[in-house]
Image (cartoon, rainbow, N blue to C red; front, top):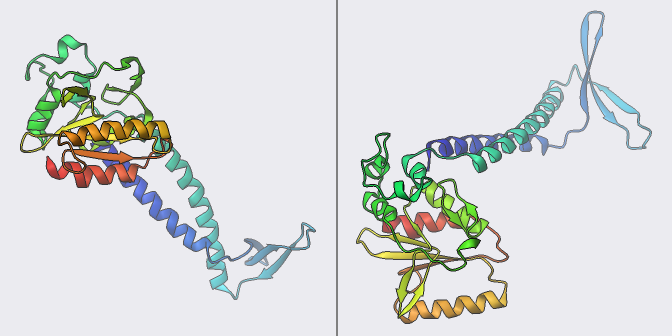
Length: 276
């Protein structure tokens, strides 16, 4: 997780906790608002409640001897205003999270022309590939930055750019790639592999600590019979040649291209990172 995203998440958690506190206050259901008048230099406090007869008029109750009701009305007004501000801040954070770019050498190099991407480590004086040196998974980071054969199948459909400059085919794959980047997990996208004489290209490839590759396929239309048919053909081919689920292959199933970020994070945390 990047530095910026870490602080965005902290702020989101803070706002979520504040919202829950305010919603608990509003759940007590106290009616009306607080009004104040000055009588002979002394403040008088009233509970003003709209009448239920549809007349548009209000009933008032003197509260100077009811400090607990004054407190509840004050908390109610505070909570309503706080939730209004929280919603604005949450919207701003969602915008920031979806538009921010983590500035690091790997991301910048990935956006350069091909001639620059293949330069040896240490060529760039502005840190260049120092991210590999500092990476928790240095070996995997070096492997991910090496040249590899990427699938040429309908390459024009790879038109969605991630924050690191990689082009993917769908918004779902964009989310997976961004979550992997946020965790700092090195990967290759649509790397061509040979499976029983056939060329296949898993969506995401990884290298484990034993220098063995394993893969993740994002299956986003499992409610589409034709898609499922193609998936089963591909899966059977994988398994016929020893690439089995939870061993060398991880499948992420969704329906209607719905995106479940919690599930993606769970797979990264529990199925991918432990192998690196």
